[in-house]
Image 1: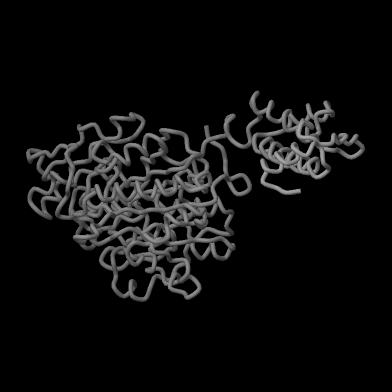
Image 2: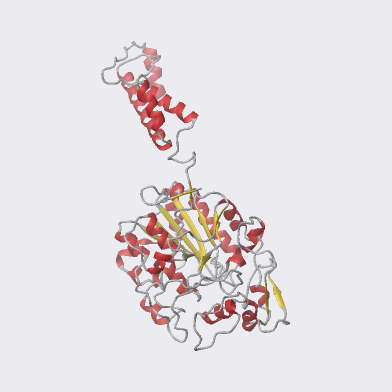
Length: 501
């Protein structure tokens, strides 16, 4: 079941985002379908011809033999065009053709990159080869309709994660990277609302590509991951919005753990596990939503055609030669949502809104953050359109704070009424029991116990005997009569509570 959990009733107070690198959904999670048939993954029947135009050319089947991938497959704008449409991009062609995407050019394009590369591109990981994802998908939620926001390389897609636009970028443009991208970000929106954010980095963070994050006032929001993340988790000091940035460089002593080929995905699995376990052990765990996704597909096969006719974020047209109008999405990528409020084994498909054409993509992150924290406005037309996932939390259905009391919880509330001196008011107690929810019952019990302890201290100070039954004095009620204690009674009761009288 689902429940709307927006500001005022939302259990989530901290959203944690980890964006890995360059892997498609089918490549990383497609074979999870063997464990959960509800997932739109693969079964081995998928294939591509090495030459789309030649039906007699070799056919490459999709396999489950992916392990270490080297070299890096093609994932430029033109390479992606060929992968999904099956024909090479030529200058002058529309960047979004009228023909349907048949997802049949992956093997063809890979062989142009390097002979034999199609075997790597047309393969995925067995569930046991990515054991951390296997467990997270089983225990929490996987989204099988989450797309890269741009059919392009890394940086344009990463920009959408926190700003819902790439500000016209369809590749890594040196001038823009140096100057910093000027668009408003979700960090700015959170700051305007008086909410907190933090960026925990293992290497100097890529979020500094946003010009606004280079402001002096934000300098204290950057924290070295290895020094601060687990500490802040343990102390319950994580901010409202957390970005985790991993190691993007592969060194002998510190291997890359971002999953970008040729980096070993086992390092990425260890890193995801480290982040998850730190969050899971935090006192903030019951208020956390952890989102894992990938910036783009990295040239690996996926069988689901990307949606078209999507809104441009800001009506900026991309540079020559593509003149891309940002009217179609990139290839599908993995996305896993983790929270104690998510039903075990949840599979998210297409969103139910806010528009009939809405989809999940990286702009869904700032869109969801806006709704959870009731921020003033969307960043662009793209996050206003993107599907959100704040409604995918588990309904309390008897186990949450808003549920009615169970039989045993009612008994505890009865005990609280005795401790608190309310038990004599039968009518009032019965009404209270009918009205109290779990969170109200827990508070009533805590308050009653504290009142009982205060009454006990009062009895002790008045010199009552140790056999005296402690009772809370209510206005107009009869005070319990003190029974004098012997010297031995006083001595041992004082020792027991480590007090002196």
